[in-house]
Length: 408
Image (cartoon, rainbow, N blue to C red; front, side):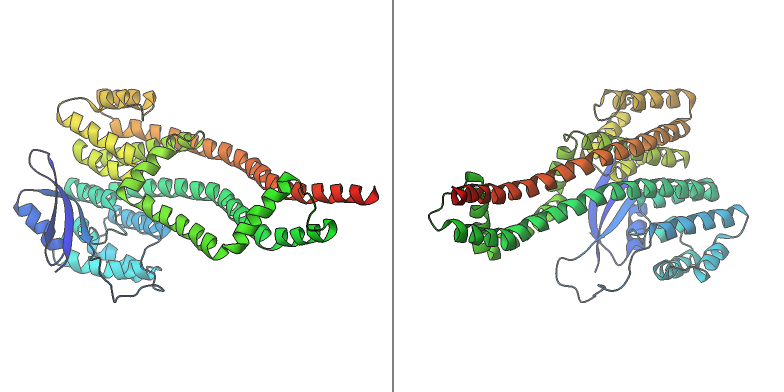
């Protein structure tokens, strides 16, 4: 029987975490509702044993742009008065993405059986995350599903735009680093040993070589002798670090580290604040309760330290403090965020105010990424040039010395 982990909220707005074994997600939702608990997140805990379901060459995830198109189309159809089931059926027939088509077939079956749309979508967390499901649930409850879907589509487009800019900014330095590492091992394994042989032939086995040349030959000798240990060890170290970063402790250490690196920390902070403002405003605009907004938003920010800060803020709000006062005192958030939140609380337009905050910081992210990208390129060129220059110096210096001895 499948095992599920869940996060739910009771009548006192207290967050409850737990695990249960039930046939499917619908049974978990039903069981929680019978206990007067409102589910926020339900995820299947996959067994750690070997699986016979191989999906290596099978696409099993909906692309972000396809999800945005689906959301906008569903919003337009429901806004025009088309019944929900008819809208879903039409979108399923014309869906270009095969994974989305399969998901919609199952969603339609569940909606036809009387399940709310939010509960049907919640069964596919890899496609419809907590934010999506909670906003749809709030839209269904308030009867404004079309408006909520418009907000969702806008939020997804903004999030996708930030992700694309980050990937494009990271692609160039990663390529240069990879080339530098490959070039280093290539030179040490194939070029430097040949140069060492030439220098020995020219000056004899007793020739005195400069320190820099001896240093490079020593490194090359170690790599050529123990390459079968060094290269797999290097690859294993990289894979191990990547896996460690995915663990809770590793992610916490990594997220804390990147908030201390000059240049990078500015971008990370602005991205986190933009995600917080955009997600929180979308949930608030959908009519989701503040504590639920904070709970869902904390998991959408993408940084463990910010997640802790938002959960701490939720606890403060639960104890009667204003969110703006808590955020203003937290060093992770710029002062403007707390001030804008205070304005939103006074005017009752928190969602509108935070949209402006999100727009502002998304523009700041664009400028910061452009600035860092312009710095990374010359820095990487200097590093590569330095490596080539070091090798050139280790070769040319002894050749010049030997030529002087020969001419003398």
